Image 1: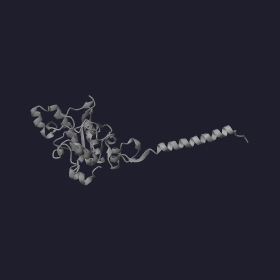
Image 2 (image 1 turned 180 degrees about the vertical axis):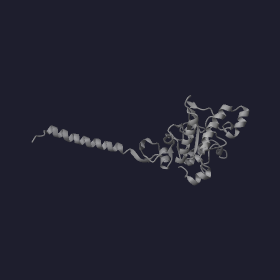
Image 3 (image 1 turned 90 degrees about the vertical axis):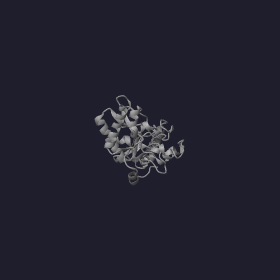
Image 4 (image 1 turned 30 degrees about the vertical axis):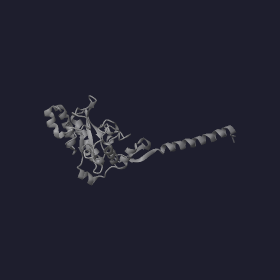
Amino acid sequence: MMKISNAFYLLLISGLFCFGCNQKEIGAIEGEIETDIIDHLGTPTTIKSSEIPALEKQLLEQGLVNVEEVVPEIRVELKYSTEDNFFGKDVYGDLIHAYLQPIVADSLKKAQEILQSEYPDYTLLIYDGARPLSVQQILWDNLDKPDSLKPLYVADPKVGSLHNYGVAVDLTIFDTSINEPLDMGTGYDFFGYAAYPDREDQMLAEGTLDSAQVANRNILRKVMNQVGFMGIGSEWWHFNAYSRKEAGEKFKIIN
């Protein structure tokens, strides 16, 4: 029988020990992986829990879906993850993806398909989607307006907004051929008659808006209305998939 030298024996034992260490390290890395998150199609999604912002985890746990997984071509620029909003503060932190109720995201996919079938260079650009009630409370508490005027700018958390149900979306149209959004006459979160769909005729007559800007708004309204979304009279960018009554019957407030 061949004798094993002491040096070789020590080398062998050392190698086995190191292999065990590597296996332990691999196990630790795999321990950071979550596989119990199910995507919109019911397929398990492997994702590192450490990479998901806390606010995003909340939305996932409450059954909402990442719109970009349902509509890959859509663009997202969450204004409340920046300081480019009427509030002037970032209240979403690390959240960069828009979330909605699954059925609402499906409707948005149809709107995107209708838009691109007629205007191949256009795509929808989301500014806001589902908004947890906790964020609604932050907006309300920090808005520098009298309580009597606050509802003109942000919904009272005691009542809630349709954003808080995950059934409202703020968006515009992005023109990929020029790499910028269409001119809608005002920016997002502009508070004044120029942003009111109900006042467009007046704004045209006064010269505050021009016909091209209103035509761009009409393109957005047309594709959204065709799939069941309803606009509101004071914000050209805001669309609801359900009425407040329907939302309350079908969904829970997002916390």
